[in-house]
Image (cartoon, rainbow, N blue to C red):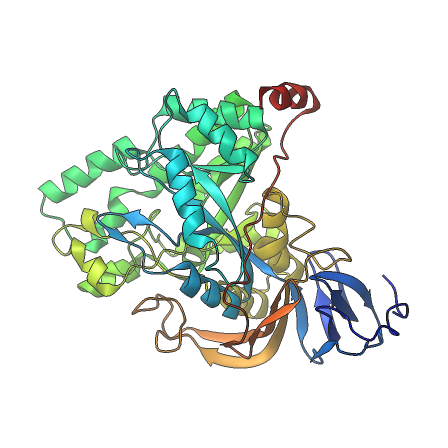
Amino acid sequence: MEDRWSACVEREQVAMALLIQGGEIVTASARYRGDIFVEDEVITRIGEDLACPPGAEIVDATGKLVFPGFIDPHVHIHLPFMATFAKDTHATASVAALIGGTTTFIEMVCPSRDEDALEGYRTWKQKAEGNSACDYAFHMGVTRFDSGTEEQLREIVRDGTASFKIFLSYKNFFGVTDEEMFHTLRLAAKLGVITTAHCENAELVSHLQHLLLAAGKTGPEWHEPSRPEAIEAEGTSRFATFVEQAGAVGYVVHLSCAPALRAAVEARLRGVKLHVESVVPHFLLDKSYTERAGVEGMKYVMSPPLRDRRNQAVLWGALQSGLIDTVGTDHCPFDVEQKLLGAKAFTQIPNGIPGLEERVNLMYTYGVKRGGLDIHRFVDALSTRAAKLFGLYPRKGTIEIGSDADLVIYDPQYRGTISAATQHTNNDYNGFEGFEIEGRPAVVTVRGKVQVRDGVFVGEKKRGRFLRREPQYLSHAETQGVNHAG
């Protein structure tokens, strides 16, 4: 770091210059007071009492925390699912994300088994391009693997999308067979990309759903018994085994319970390259929410389901220790009318809950402030680790000279209550209605441009860029062969 900036003071104008003064900078590994100077979208100086050049915008961060921009590694924005579409657009979701302190999200591209993978990828990109206020990347969903899939996935990786997504659930729609999973993981290993996975057992879930419906058990409270903890644990163990045998790198998405965590840890102990994500709802909500009458219970149907509350202490402990790498949202808003599609059968309720806007404030409040979560682990889990795992670091996920100036000036003195009445997500309810928050972003920047002030979007609606990523999980021996293979 430098404690005095001088060379540029004499310039008459500084393009896109921003000086953040007097804040307490907090990263995954450090905490200190200092100023940050930004020029041409990146951080160029960090130090104490930095001089301000003519024309630079100044943000007073006195009394506030300065975090690297937060990264949500798991969102759904454009999503055709169960005869309907998720409610957000990239315009609405990106503004909600920024107001909540998330400056980059990674969206799941999810064509169905009947759709062409490359066409699906292009559709998702076109939906986002020119419509996002924050930066974004994609995980490419692999929902079938046939003779043409490999070349399509190679092309997608060459385009800068260096991660895959598979579903071991949603039979005949998103779900892959074990054979398709193995082929996907083998290709991922050859290409050096990480594969994320929704870990359940599609066959068992299908059978349990049939048995419950046949017994007249149709309400949302039966969603969790149709895909119990043991099924998630089995799916996690099976995915880990396939990752191991394929020589790949895996990432379990939205892990919800102690048995699944145990399966992941056991795999790691034998050397499997496996990472774990949990999502905000599983830290703070439990299955009693789906036991509420009528549509109130339907609002909370998601997969994996909300679990028995005893799992929450396990997840918090695993987050603190690093057994859980990242915290995402699985953001997927469906409104009340859409949830009512499942009024006669829980299997027809669109799965998902919003959370993109609330994640940072909830994890800060109930983790750092009230739960004793180490603040550096908070930054790591909500920003830095995702950047490292998905090929964005150190461009994103840290505060360093040369990094993108995605910054969250956070006001720990703010007090508020979450409500659908004040949210920016395009949905008519909020799953965290009434939750208190202690702290919120006061200023949020994307590559040095102020996009949010005091909970209000004030920036450029089209500022967001597609983030190209390179494969980063190749061994030296594999590198030559894969490069020659295209």
